[in-house]
Length: 148
Image: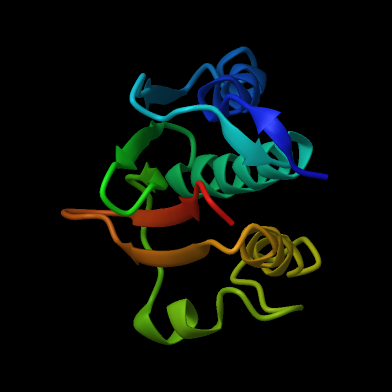
Protein backbone atom coordinates (compact mmCIF):
# COMPACT_ATOMS: atom_id res chain seq x y z
CA UNK A 1 0.00 0.00 0.00
CA UNK A 2 2.36 2.70 -1.18
CA UNK A 3 1.58 6.25 -0.08
CA UNK A 4 3.80 9.36 0.00
CA UNK A 5 5.95 9.06 3.10
CA UNK A 6 9.27 10.10 4.66
CA UNK A 7 11.82 7.25 4.57
CA UNK A 8 13.94 8.97 7.22
CA UNK A 9 11.01 8.95 9.66
CA UNK A 10 10.29 5.25 9.07
CA UNK A 11 13.92 4.28 9.65
CA UNK A 12 14.08 6.37 12.84
CA UNK A 13 10.95 4.64 14.18
CA UNK A 14 12.52 1.22 13.66
CA UNK A 15 15.82 2.29 15.25
CA UNK A 16 14.05 3.74 18.29
CA UNK A 17 12.74 0.28 19.17
CA UNK A 18 16.32 -0.98 19.46
CA UNK A 19 18.04 2.04 20.99
CA UNK A 20 15.79 1.76 24.02
CA UNK A 21 16.37 -1.97 24.59
CA UNK A 22 19.96 -2.59 23.48
CA UNK A 23 22.29 -1.23 26.12
CA UNK A 24 25.40 -3.10 24.99
CA UNK A 25 25.07 -2.61 21.23
CA UNK A 26 25.59 0.88 19.88
CA UNK A 27 23.15 1.78 17.08
CA UNK A 28 24.23 4.82 15.05
CA UNK A 29 22.13 6.42 12.32
CA UNK A 30 23.36 8.81 9.66
CA UNK A 31 20.25 10.27 8.06
CA UNK A 32 19.95 12.31 4.90
CA UNK A 33 17.81 15.33 4.26
CA UNK A 34 18.38 14.81 0.52
CA UNK A 35 15.91 11.92 0.23
CA UNK A 36 12.64 13.45 -0.94
CA UNK A 37 9.26 12.16 0.14
CA UNK A 38 8.15 9.35 -2.18
CA UNK A 39 5.53 6.60 -2.31
CA UNK A 40 6.26 3.36 -0.47
CA UNK A 41 4.60 1.11 2.09
CA UNK A 42 5.93 2.50 5.37
CA UNK A 43 4.86 -0.48 7.48
CA UNK A 44 6.58 -2.92 5.14
CA UNK A 45 9.81 -0.90 5.00
CA UNK A 46 9.71 -0.63 8.79
CA UNK A 47 9.42 -4.43 8.90
CA UNK A 48 12.52 -4.65 6.66
CA UNK A 49 14.47 -2.36 8.98
CA UNK A 50 13.39 -4.24 12.12
CA UNK A 51 14.48 -7.55 10.60
CA UNK A 52 17.85 -6.20 9.47
CA UNK A 53 18.45 -4.50 12.83
CA UNK A 54 17.53 -7.65 14.70
CA UNK A 55 19.95 -9.71 12.61
CA UNK A 56 22.73 -7.11 12.92
CA UNK A 57 22.35 -6.83 16.69
CA UNK A 58 22.37 -10.62 17.03
CA UNK A 59 25.52 -10.78 14.88
CA UNK A 60 27.41 -8.34 17.12
CA UNK A 61 26.90 -10.52 20.19
CA UNK A 62 26.95 -8.92 23.62
CA UNK A 63 28.57 -5.73 22.43
CA UNK A 64 29.32 -4.11 19.13
CA UNK A 65 28.06 -1.49 16.78
CA UNK A 66 25.43 -1.28 14.09
CA UNK A 67 25.61 1.66 11.68
CA UNK A 68 22.73 2.69 9.42
CA UNK A 69 23.33 5.10 6.54
CA UNK A 70 20.62 6.70 4.42
CA UNK A 71 21.64 8.23 1.12
CA UNK A 72 20.21 9.46 -2.15
CA UNK A 73 21.45 9.24 -5.73
CA UNK A 74 19.86 12.21 -7.52
CA UNK A 75 20.81 11.03 -11.01
CA UNK A 76 19.28 7.57 -10.55
CA UNK A 77 16.49 8.86 -8.25
CA UNK A 78 17.36 6.05 -5.86
CA UNK A 79 17.27 5.96 -2.06
CA UNK A 80 20.01 3.83 -0.52
CA UNK A 81 19.94 2.30 2.95
CA UNK A 82 22.96 0.53 4.41
CA UNK A 83 22.81 -1.51 7.61
CA UNK A 84 26.29 -2.55 8.74
CA UNK A 85 27.41 -4.51 11.77
CA UNK A 86 30.81 -5.41 13.20
CA UNK A 87 29.86 -9.01 13.96
CA UNK A 88 31.53 -12.17 12.71
CA UNK A 89 30.31 -11.80 9.14
CA UNK A 90 28.76 -14.29 6.75
CA UNK A 91 30.62 -16.84 4.65
CA UNK A 92 30.59 -16.51 0.86
CA UNK A 93 28.58 -19.73 0.54
CA UNK A 94 25.96 -18.56 3.03
CA UNK A 95 25.72 -15.13 1.35
CA UNK A 96 24.56 -16.84 -1.84
CA UNK A 97 21.62 -18.41 0.03
CA UNK A 98 20.69 -15.65 2.50
CA UNK A 99 17.46 -14.67 0.79
CA UNK A 100 16.19 -18.23 0.24
CA UNK A 101 13.16 -19.28 2.29
CA UNK A 102 13.98 -21.51 5.28
CA UNK A 103 17.72 -20.86 5.08
CA UNK A 104 19.27 -19.66 8.32
CA UNK A 105 22.69 -19.48 9.93
CA UNK A 106 21.05 -19.21 13.36
CA UNK A 107 20.09 -22.08 15.65
CA UNK A 108 16.66 -20.52 16.19
CA UNK A 109 14.09 -18.93 13.89
CA UNK A 110 12.36 -20.05 10.73
CA UNK A 111 14.78 -18.79 8.09
CA UNK A 112 12.02 -16.65 6.59
CA UNK A 113 13.14 -13.20 7.77
CA UNK A 114 15.50 -12.30 4.94
CA UNK A 115 13.27 -14.03 2.36
CA UNK A 116 10.44 -11.72 3.47
CA UNK A 117 12.79 -8.72 3.45
CA UNK A 118 13.83 -9.57 -0.11
CA UNK A 119 10.20 -9.97 -1.18
CA UNK A 120 9.23 -6.58 0.29
CA UNK A 121 12.15 -4.84 -1.42
CA UNK A 122 11.29 -6.53 -4.74
CA UNK A 123 7.66 -5.42 -4.32
CA UNK A 124 9.06 -1.87 -4.21
CA UNK A 125 11.08 -2.58 -7.40
CA UNK A 126 14.23 -2.31 -5.32
CA UNK A 127 17.31 -4.42 -4.70
CA UNK A 128 19.02 -5.81 -1.62
CA UNK A 129 22.42 -7.42 -1.31
CA UNK A 130 24.80 -8.51 1.42
CA UNK A 131 28.49 -7.62 1.37
CA UNK A 132 31.40 -7.91 3.74
CA UNK A 133 31.78 -4.95 6.06
CA UNK A 134 35.49 -4.18 6.16
CA UNK A 135 37.32 -4.93 8.37
CA UNK A 136 34.66 -7.07 10.08
CA UNK A 137 30.98 -7.89 9.86
CA UNK A 138 28.26 -7.66 7.23
CA UNK A 139 26.66 -4.82 5.30
CA UNK A 140 23.18 -5.03 3.81
CA UNK A 141 22.56 -2.53 1.02
CA UNK A 142 19.06 -1.64 -0.12
CA UNK A 143 18.30 0.50 -3.15
CA UNK A 144 14.78 1.81 -3.63
CA UNK A 145 13.75 3.68 -6.78
CA UNK A 146 11.66 6.78 -6.08
CA UNK A 147 9.68 6.35 -9.28
CA UNK A 148 8.32 2.84 -9.46
